[in-house]
Amino acid sequence: MISVMDEYLVHQIESTVDHVASTDVNWQDRFYFNFLDRQGRFSGLLGYGAYPNRNIQEGVFRAVCDNKLYIANFTRTVNHDREKIFADGLAVNVVEPMKKWRVSFDLKDPAVKADLEFSGRNVPYEFVPIFHRRNGQVVWNQVHYTQAGSYTGSVSIGGQTFTDLVGIRDRSWGLRNIQELDLWIWVSANFGSYWLTAWHSETAAGKVICSDGAIMYDGKTEVVPIVHMEHDIQFEPGKRTPKSARYLLTDENGKRTEVLAQARDTIFVGLVPPGVVDLSDPGQLDMQDKTAGIFDQMQEFRVGSDVGRGLTEFLVVGGSEKYKDRWTAMVPR
Image (tube, rainbow, N blue to C red; front, side, top):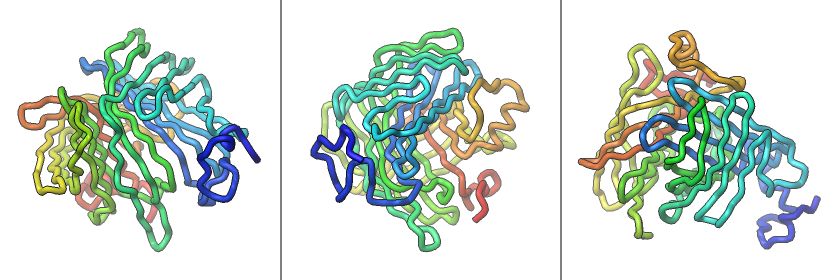
């Protein structure tokens, strides 16, 4: 069926815009924002996407403030209006392509309110397309780019209001079946005069699927891509949650950059109902640690004498032989 988007010169297959080339139900068109208080008191993320072959839009909001985890989920049926981004109190608009987005939500359970405008600090970085087969089946065929920036506006959560926020956004589209993936590590950090994005994925056995990224300097558009990332992760005693990490990034000219990271807060991402989880309760914390398929951590980063803040995302659904004492497959292989 024709829709508003069919009026624009954006068609890529011989069909209306509400159809995509793939019939796989995991084909998706997504965005992601993370937002961090510069003083380290609050961190959050919003991931949202359209799934044309399921005819839905859905997303998640997760945040940590004062040792409490705030959880909200969004979903709606698409009625030939994929260009509109709204659901359950959430509204998102592109203010200026490649530069500014506006995100607002007013949630009842948990009680969180936000009205934010993201402004990029540089041009987005476009990753090399990712393609991966598992047992002969394509499970990952995706394009994505990312951009660091700052926010105007505010987030009110836990009786507090935060206005001095920075973060990184991501746009992606294509096929991604998370249940068939093993491990990825995505480092995104803001420093004083530059920002860092590094994306690394591998099989449980350690075979690299993709390793990509860049260090982007303010006022400069030229970049030298990162072509490999080595990782060494330490964990909280007796838990699956990372505590600290050392990343060694190699760019295409052979230059190596050591990045040291120390965890400050952990956003546990899993299939859980909305509400507020008290992470100061050992039982609740243990449950989140055991059931999370994704750990999004606010980390403090050090590159030489430079100090930055950002989020590292660890997807661990399929496990890892390297960290098999902590990360084993959550889905039978």
